[in-house]
Length: 308
Image (cartoon, rainbow, N blue to C red; front, side):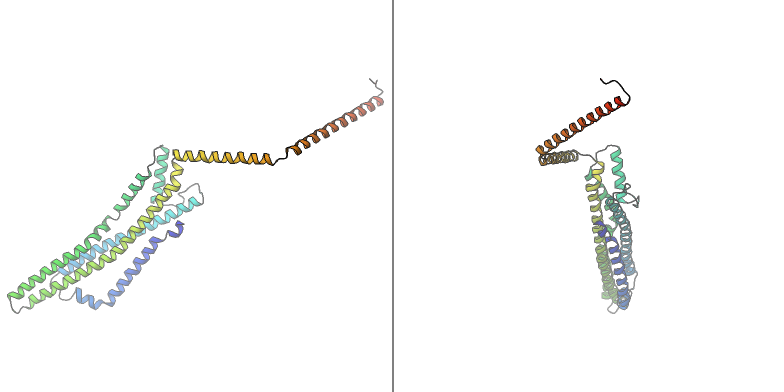
Protein backbone atom coordinates (compact mmCIF):
# COMPACT_ATOMS: atom_id res chain seq x y z
CA UNK A 1 0.00 0.00 0.00
CA UNK A 2 2.73 2.43 0.94
CA UNK A 3 4.60 1.76 -2.30
CA UNK A 4 1.83 3.58 -4.17
CA UNK A 5 1.92 6.54 -1.76
CA UNK A 6 5.69 7.09 -1.78
CA UNK A 7 5.66 9.60 -4.63
CA UNK A 8 4.26 12.63 -2.81
CA UNK A 9 7.62 14.38 -2.48
CA UNK A 10 8.31 13.87 -6.18
CA UNK A 11 4.90 15.29 -7.07
CA UNK A 12 5.55 18.38 -4.93
CA UNK A 13 8.97 18.84 -6.57
CA UNK A 14 7.32 18.68 -9.99
CA UNK A 15 4.70 21.23 -8.88
CA UNK A 16 7.46 23.51 -7.59
CA UNK A 17 9.39 23.31 -10.86
CA UNK A 18 6.28 23.91 -12.99
CA UNK A 19 5.12 26.83 -10.82
CA UNK A 20 8.56 28.44 -10.88
CA UNK A 21 8.73 28.09 -14.66
CA UNK A 22 5.23 29.56 -15.00
CA UNK A 23 6.17 32.55 -12.83
CA UNK A 24 9.27 33.15 -14.94
CA UNK A 25 7.23 33.01 -18.15
CA UNK A 26 4.66 35.45 -16.74
CA UNK A 27 7.46 37.72 -15.55
CA UNK A 28 8.95 37.82 -19.04
CA UNK A 29 5.53 38.35 -20.63
CA UNK A 30 4.66 41.25 -18.28
CA UNK A 31 8.20 42.61 -18.16
CA UNK A 32 7.07 46.06 -19.32
CA UNK A 33 4.50 46.38 -16.54
CA UNK A 34 6.89 45.03 -13.91
CA UNK A 35 9.64 47.35 -15.11
CA UNK A 36 7.27 50.29 -14.77
CA UNK A 37 6.27 49.24 -11.24
CA UNK A 38 9.70 48.34 -9.91
CA UNK A 39 12.14 50.56 -11.83
CA UNK A 40 10.26 53.71 -12.87
CA UNK A 41 10.33 56.82 -10.67
CA UNK A 42 12.90 55.31 -8.31
CA UNK A 43 14.60 58.42 -6.95
CA UNK A 44 16.10 56.55 -3.99
CA UNK A 45 17.39 53.03 -3.38
CA UNK A 46 14.69 52.34 -0.79
CA UNK A 47 12.50 50.41 -3.23
CA UNK A 48 15.37 48.20 -4.41
CA UNK A 49 16.48 47.55 -0.83
CA UNK A 50 13.01 46.63 0.46
CA UNK A 51 12.07 44.46 -2.52
CA UNK A 52 15.53 42.88 -2.40
CA UNK A 53 15.02 42.05 1.28
CA UNK A 54 11.63 40.43 0.59
CA UNK A 55 12.93 38.46 -2.39
CA UNK A 56 16.03 37.42 -0.45
CA UNK A 57 13.94 36.03 2.40
CA UNK A 58 11.64 34.35 -0.10
CA UNK A 59 14.54 32.67 -1.92
CA UNK A 60 16.04 31.53 1.38
CA UNK A 61 12.74 29.93 2.37
CA UNK A 62 12.34 28.38 -1.09
CA UNK A 63 15.83 26.85 -0.95
CA UNK A 64 15.03 25.38 2.47
CA UNK A 65 11.78 23.93 1.13
CA UNK A 66 13.66 22.38 -1.80
CA UNK A 67 16.24 20.85 0.56
CA UNK A 68 13.49 19.39 2.76
CA UNK A 69 11.66 17.94 -0.25
CA UNK A 70 14.82 16.22 -1.48
CA UNK A 71 15.51 14.91 2.03
CA UNK A 72 11.98 13.58 2.45
CA UNK A 73 12.16 12.00 -1.00
CA UNK A 74 15.07 9.93 0.28
CA UNK A 75 13.13 9.11 3.44
CA UNK A 76 10.18 7.90 1.38
CA UNK A 77 12.45 5.68 -0.72
CA UNK A 78 14.04 4.19 2.41
CA UNK A 79 10.64 3.62 4.01
CA UNK A 80 9.36 1.93 0.85
CA UNK A 81 12.39 -0.42 0.79
CA UNK A 82 11.95 -1.21 4.47
CA UNK A 83 8.26 -1.96 3.93
CA UNK A 84 9.15 -4.19 0.99
CA UNK A 85 11.67 -6.08 3.15
CA UNK A 86 8.97 -6.64 5.75
CA UNK A 87 6.56 -7.94 3.15
CA UNK A 88 9.18 -10.37 1.78
CA UNK A 89 10.16 -11.47 5.33
CA UNK A 90 13.84 -10.83 4.75
CA UNK A 91 16.21 -11.50 7.61
CA UNK A 92 17.96 -8.14 7.17
CA UNK A 93 15.14 -5.62 7.24
CA UNK A 94 17.54 -2.72 6.56
CA UNK A 95 18.81 -4.14 3.27
CA UNK A 96 18.93 -1.29 0.76
CA UNK A 97 17.82 1.24 3.41
CA UNK A 98 19.94 4.31 4.03
CA UNK A 99 21.60 4.11 7.51
CA UNK A 100 20.87 7.81 8.04
CA UNK A 101 17.14 7.48 7.34
CA UNK A 102 14.53 7.89 10.06
CA UNK A 103 13.29 4.29 9.84
CA UNK A 104 16.86 2.92 10.07
CA UNK A 105 17.58 5.05 13.14
CA UNK A 106 14.27 3.96 14.70
CA UNK A 107 15.14 0.29 14.02
CA UNK A 108 18.62 0.66 15.57
CA UNK A 109 17.14 2.41 18.60
CA UNK A 110 14.58 -0.34 19.18
CA UNK A 111 17.23 -3.05 18.79
CA UNK A 112 19.50 -1.32 21.30
CA UNK A 113 16.71 -0.92 23.84
CA UNK A 114 15.70 -4.56 23.35
CA UNK A 115 19.28 -5.76 23.96
CA UNK A 116 19.45 -3.70 27.16
CA UNK A 117 16.00 -5.02 28.16
CA UNK A 118 14.77 -1.45 28.52
CA UNK A 119 11.07 -0.65 28.48
CA UNK A 120 10.04 0.93 25.18
CA UNK A 121 7.73 3.96 25.38
CA UNK A 122 6.36 4.50 21.92
CA UNK A 123 4.72 7.81 22.84
CA UNK A 124 8.07 9.23 23.94
CA UNK A 125 9.77 8.06 20.75
CA UNK A 126 7.03 9.59 18.59
CA UNK A 127 7.12 12.90 20.47
CA UNK A 128 10.91 13.09 20.20
CA UNK A 129 10.86 12.41 16.46
CA UNK A 130 8.12 14.98 15.90
CA UNK A 131 10.04 17.62 17.87
CA UNK A 132 13.21 16.91 15.90
CA UNK A 133 11.46 17.14 12.55
CA UNK A 134 9.64 20.33 13.57
CA UNK A 135 12.97 22.09 14.06
CA UNK A 136 13.79 21.46 10.39
CA UNK A 137 10.94 23.75 9.32
CA UNK A 138 11.69 26.50 11.86
CA UNK A 139 13.41 28.75 9.29
CA UNK A 140 10.54 28.37 6.82
CA UNK A 141 7.99 29.19 9.53
CA UNK A 142 9.95 32.30 10.48
CA UNK A 143 10.15 33.55 6.88
CA UNK A 144 6.51 32.63 6.30
CA UNK A 145 5.44 34.69 9.31
CA UNK A 146 7.47 37.83 8.51
CA UNK A 147 6.92 38.10 4.75
CA UNK A 148 3.69 40.05 5.11
CA UNK A 149 5.26 42.14 7.86
CA UNK A 150 8.10 43.00 5.47
CA UNK A 151 5.51 44.19 2.96
CA UNK A 152 3.83 46.30 5.62
CA UNK A 153 7.23 47.70 6.64
CA UNK A 154 7.94 48.58 3.02
CA UNK A 155 4.58 50.29 2.75
CA UNK A 156 5.19 52.34 5.90
CA UNK A 157 8.67 53.38 4.76
CA UNK A 158 7.38 54.25 1.29
CA UNK A 159 4.51 56.32 2.67
CA UNK A 160 7.01 58.14 4.87
CA UNK A 161 9.05 58.97 1.76
CA UNK A 162 5.85 60.15 0.05
CA UNK A 163 5.03 62.39 3.02
CA UNK A 164 8.50 63.91 2.85
CA UNK A 165 7.92 64.67 -0.83
CA UNK A 166 4.47 66.10 -0.06
CA UNK A 167 5.90 68.44 2.58
CA UNK A 168 8.51 69.65 0.09
CA UNK A 169 5.75 70.15 -2.46
CA UNK A 170 3.78 72.25 0.01
CA UNK A 171 6.81 74.38 0.86
CA UNK A 172 7.45 75.14 -2.80
CA UNK A 173 4.41 75.64 -4.96
CA UNK A 174 6.21 74.29 -8.00
CA UNK A 175 8.64 71.53 -7.14
CA UNK A 176 9.29 68.63 -9.47
CA UNK A 177 11.49 67.04 -6.83
CA UNK A 178 8.71 67.01 -4.25
CA UNK A 179 6.20 65.58 -6.72
CA UNK A 180 8.74 62.98 -7.80
CA UNK A 181 9.27 61.92 -4.20
CA UNK A 182 5.52 61.53 -3.74
CA UNK A 183 5.24 59.36 -6.84
CA UNK A 184 8.35 57.42 -5.82
CA UNK A 185 6.94 56.76 -2.35
CA UNK A 186 3.58 55.57 -3.63
CA UNK A 187 5.23 53.38 -6.29
CA UNK A 188 7.55 51.80 -3.72
CA UNK A 189 4.62 51.16 -1.36
CA UNK A 190 2.75 49.39 -4.16
CA UNK A 191 5.73 47.33 -5.29
CA UNK A 192 6.80 46.18 -1.82
CA UNK A 193 3.26 45.20 -0.85
CA UNK A 194 2.73 43.31 -4.11
CA UNK A 195 6.08 41.53 -3.80
CA UNK A 196 5.40 40.49 -0.21
CA UNK A 197 1.90 39.22 -0.96
CA UNK A 198 2.95 37.19 -4.02
CA UNK A 199 5.94 35.69 -2.23
CA UNK A 200 3.76 34.92 0.80
CA UNK A 201 1.18 33.08 -1.32
CA UNK A 202 3.85 31.10 -3.17
CA UNK A 203 5.69 30.15 0.01
CA UNK A 204 2.47 29.36 1.91
CA UNK A 205 1.35 26.78 -0.65
CA UNK A 206 4.61 24.85 -0.73
CA UNK A 207 5.18 25.20 3.01
CA UNK A 208 1.76 23.60 3.58
CA UNK A 209 2.68 20.86 1.11
CA UNK A 210 5.92 20.16 3.01
CA UNK A 211 4.04 20.04 6.32
CA UNK A 212 1.51 17.58 4.89
CA UNK A 213 4.34 15.45 3.51
CA UNK A 214 6.10 15.52 6.88
CA UNK A 215 2.92 14.53 8.72
CA UNK A 216 2.20 11.66 6.31
CA UNK A 217 5.78 10.37 6.49
CA UNK A 218 5.93 10.43 10.28
CA UNK A 219 2.49 8.82 10.42
CA UNK A 220 3.68 5.89 8.30
CA UNK A 221 6.77 5.48 10.48
CA UNK A 222 4.74 5.42 13.70
CA UNK A 223 2.24 3.02 12.14
CA UNK A 224 5.04 0.61 11.17
CA UNK A 225 6.54 0.97 14.64
CA UNK A 226 3.24 0.15 16.32
CA UNK A 227 2.11 -2.70 14.10
CA UNK A 228 5.38 -4.37 13.06
CA UNK A 229 8.43 -3.26 15.05
CA UNK A 230 7.20 -3.14 18.65
CA UNK A 231 5.88 -6.75 18.57
CA UNK A 232 9.36 -7.80 17.40
CA UNK A 233 11.28 -6.11 20.22
CA UNK A 234 8.91 -5.73 23.15
CA UNK A 235 7.12 -8.50 25.07
CA UNK A 236 4.14 -7.17 27.00
CA UNK A 237 1.65 -8.85 29.31
CA UNK A 238 -1.05 -8.35 26.71
CA UNK A 239 1.08 -10.07 24.05
CA UNK A 240 1.85 -13.03 26.34
CA UNK A 241 -1.83 -13.33 27.28
CA UNK A 242 -2.80 -13.19 23.62
CA UNK A 243 -0.30 -15.92 22.72
CA UNK A 244 -1.55 -18.08 25.61
CA UNK A 245 -5.11 -17.64 24.43
CA UNK A 246 -4.08 -18.61 20.91
CA UNK A 247 -2.40 -21.78 22.25
CA UNK A 248 -5.46 -22.68 24.31
CA UNK A 249 -7.69 -22.08 21.32
CA UNK A 250 -5.51 -24.30 19.10
CA UNK A 251 -5.41 -27.04 21.78
CA UNK A 252 -9.20 -26.90 22.07
CA UNK A 253 -9.55 -27.24 18.31
CA UNK A 254 -7.13 -30.19 18.35
CA UNK A 255 -9.11 -31.95 21.09
CA UNK A 256 -12.32 -31.38 19.17
CA UNK A 257 -10.71 -32.82 16.06
CA UNK A 258 -9.59 -35.93 17.99
CA UNK A 259 -13.10 -36.41 19.43
CA UNK A 260 -14.61 -36.08 15.98
CA UNK A 261 -12.14 -38.63 14.61
CA UNK A 262 -12.99 -41.05 17.42
CA UNK A 263 -16.71 -40.55 16.93
CA UNK A 264 -16.29 -41.22 13.24
CA UNK A 265 -14.77 -44.64 13.96
CA UNK A 266 -17.06 -47.75 13.93
CA UNK A 267 -15.88 -49.49 17.13
CA UNK A 268 -17.92 -52.63 16.45
CA UNK A 269 -16.38 -53.06 13.00
CA UNK A 270 -12.98 -52.32 14.45
CA UNK A 271 -13.42 -54.99 17.17
CA UNK A 272 -14.66 -57.50 14.62
CA UNK A 273 -11.65 -56.77 12.42
CA UNK A 274 -9.30 -57.27 15.37
CA UNK A 275 -10.96 -60.62 16.22
CA UNK A 276 -10.70 -61.75 12.62
CA UNK A 277 -7.04 -60.78 12.49
CA UNK A 278 -6.39 -62.66 15.74
CA UNK A 279 -8.20 -65.75 14.43
CA UNK A 280 -6.22 -65.68 11.18
CA UNK A 281 -2.99 -65.28 13.13
CA UNK A 282 -3.92 -68.27 15.34
CA UNK A 283 -4.73 -70.44 12.28
CA UNK A 284 -1.47 -69.49 10.61
CA UNK A 285 0.41 -70.32 13.81
CA UNK A 286 -1.23 -73.77 14.06
CA UNK A 287 -0.52 -74.46 10.37
CA UNK A 288 3.11 -73.54 10.90
CA UNK A 289 3.38 -75.86 13.91
CA UNK A 290 1.85 -78.71 11.88
CA UNK A 291 4.37 -78.19 9.11
CA UNK A 292 7.21 -78.16 11.64
CA UNK A 293 5.96 -81.50 13.07
CA UNK A 294 5.84 -83.03 9.61
CA UNK A 295 9.35 -81.76 8.85
CA UNK A 296 10.62 -83.19 12.13
CA UNK A 297 9.05 -86.61 11.32
CA UNK A 298 10.63 -86.63 7.87
CA UNK A 299 14.05 -85.79 9.25
CA UNK A 300 13.82 -88.52 11.86
CA UNK A 301 12.83 -91.09 9.22
CA UNK A 302 15.59 -89.95 6.88
CA UNK A 303 18.34 -90.05 9.48
CA UNK A 304 16.79 -93.14 11.23
CA UNK A 305 16.54 -91.35 14.47
CA UNK A 306 14.57 -92.79 17.31
CA UNK A 307 11.06 -91.56 17.53
CA UNK A 308 9.92 -90.35 20.85
